[in-house]
Image (cartoon, rainbow, N blue to C red; front, side, top):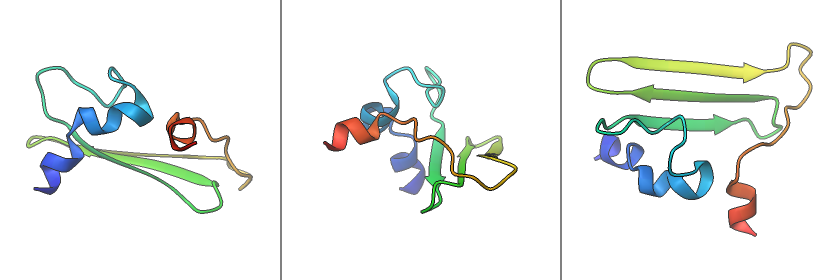
Length: 76
């Protein structure tokens, strides 16, 4: 059930767009993104039945990162 929820491209579309880097046509790819409360770190974890991948992004000097998702505009 969790994999089904995390691979729902329609649910991700408002925040990331219909053809975001999280979308692989013909393949269900589950993905979870996150950001720390102070916007100093962001991460994404993704998986299929065959592979799992994770990535982290942040600034080496511990300063906040710029908020870049479309989700802010959707919530207004």
